[in-house]
Image (cartoon, rainbow, N blue to C red; front, side):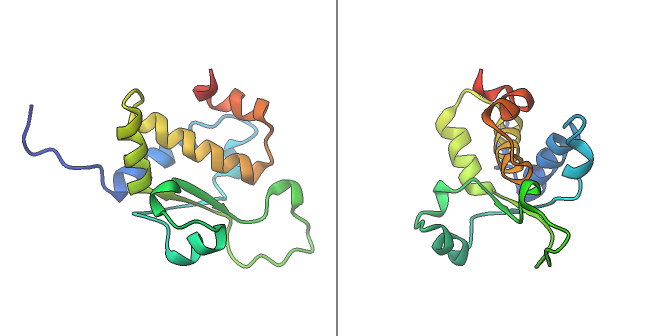
Length: 133
């Protein structure tokens, strides 16, 4: 085993997230590209406060935007719909699980956040993310 291994960085998590988004099939692939993906080490204090959370390691992802099922032409967006992924929380969950690849976990978190964006049901999620099987 190589002694020079390091934890996956922000760019690695972002690349896995983009690959997962690119793998979404129709009709989701096109609209999914309109959602910005941002990867940070942990959620900031304001995000945690808004969610009533204290431990940043409990939050692996967050959707920030107006779900497509609630959008109106009259809406004045404050910014782009964004999915936030939090590297340290994802890595902690990955290590704790020990039975999934990092790509599988990032895909699962991303799909869960897209579920908020698209207004998906549990059946919709299961058709995109086989995690539930």
